[in-house]
Image (cartoon, rainbow, N blue to C red; front, side, top):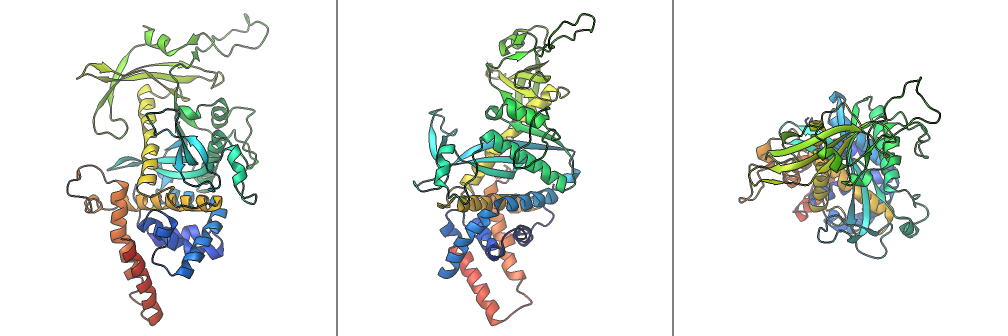
Length: 470
């Protein structure tokens, strides 16, 4: 993968083509401010004249009203920039994350589960909940990288009344939102002229009969109502994790026509739990060594696998892999985990490796909040929260794609002296390098052949804005 000379200007032109005309003039300045000084909207606009700041802030509403078109254009840009038509298999990850907000008048905000609080498993935080589907990109130097593809806010039913009636969305569960996001991704692939094999990775929170059957194309499942299309033609290979107390079933024996009895054929055989699979001597216990979760260290894993079925899959065969970590030096073993693949022809080792890629979206969420300032914009209206989140997320991908063909040493040149120079460049390294090289050069090279008084004033205003963002 490489960035192919991706620039800020080309990206802005692509997005502006789908926005309202009044918003096109200010989108580039908003994106530039989000990249140069992540944080509140005020910090984005620092350095501009007071009248211009008001007009730019008002355009956030117009951008939010075209958020769906913005995401469609962004997805096509990402597919083209990454040359996904050359990839045979595309791995997608779905997950959600809470975005902390403050203030009683923030539209669409409410109490959501906070998974980052390890001390209290039932803790909640006030804010928005963002459901996102990301794509896993294999980089030649930095291994796997997760980039956002589509996203949407999840709003609880009791919080919908706080949103203005003109822009109020209909209530949807996270599973319904995830299904529509998948459908939108498939539509973007079709529009780009590619038809890859899609592997979907998700955690236990999205294990659902409804979602599983829709994505695997079971008969009788309906498409999302606003799309008006059959959803059964969308084929996904799912790799996920089940709960430890999940109940699986053996596949029922085929009954010949001579001995067939009255009634429906059996869908499920004898029940099988994790302890039954582990204790079964007929299933061999195997060991393998992997690089899991982006770590350079080798991890020893022992596992057992068996083709079974479950009520989630409604009788369809699935590959169940029961595995645990083994520390040979300390003589310790971890607890058994249950991983499932809808493709029974997949090797058990591949199921473990693929599910480990799901951790990439957790790193993505961390970078968006920590380095890009997602959730710090201090907006009250729902459409402005949408547009500011989309600008931050799109800027994240722009920096990542731009850095693909950059020299690694240049990306690390702005690190602190005490930092580890051997680790791969973080998003903060890439963002600082883009500020230093691409953005600074952009504001000099495009003015070399044009010199007049108005132009000098424009350069002066841009330089003041740049210096204020340092």
